[in-house]
Image (tube, rainbow, N blue to C red; front, side):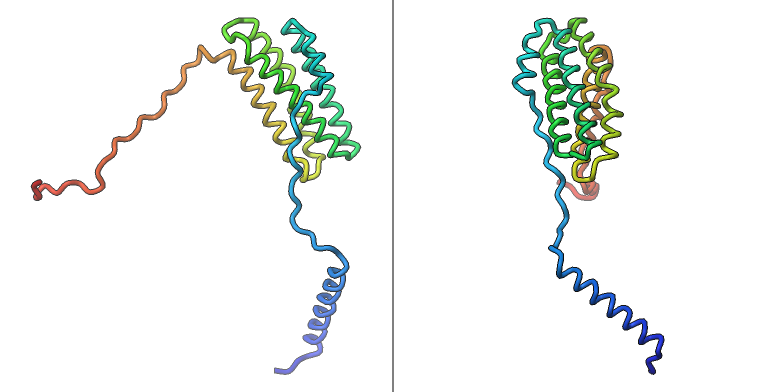
Amino acid sequence: MAITFRHASIFLTQLVGACGLAISALGQPAQGPRMPAPPPMRFVSRAERSQLDANRDPKSRLKSTIKLAEDRLTRAESMTTQKSYEEASKEIGSYLGLIGDLRAYIAGMDQEKGATRDLYRHMEMAVRPHIPRLAVMRRTTPALYSPNIKDAEEYIKETRAEALDSFYGHSVLREPPPPEKAQTPKDPPDPARRP
């Protein structure tokens, strides 16, 4: 088999390309797969906690909590547009902490009262527009931080579901679980065999 000029030129081109990649790879540190950013810590700051505890009326506490949470979400959006993703993640953690605190506060109230259902209704209406805002943030956030924002979206969806369930918890008939199938022996008994 004779090597033609064409085969030799293709081989040399590949050899030079491989050498160039090897030389450029020597100058750079090895990069492994990057781990996603840790989830943000969900908390309510002391100043926010004292501001919330000062509200004795449940409606005023709800309004204060929603206002503080929206402020945190607005700051997170601002940090995302400034490409300060670590700071945005911290703001998302504080936002989720406030929403979680509100959920726990309302869940601790008497669920049979109409006033509690009103609080759930107001909470649901307040957090509903947060979901598209979080979705916009997630689209502009790098893959390293976007799972945290996706988790925040899911948490707000769960919050809405919990609020809506408070209206239908006693009036909706739940479907019973499917009956368990009777266990049948693997080998049917042989009629010719007697015990």
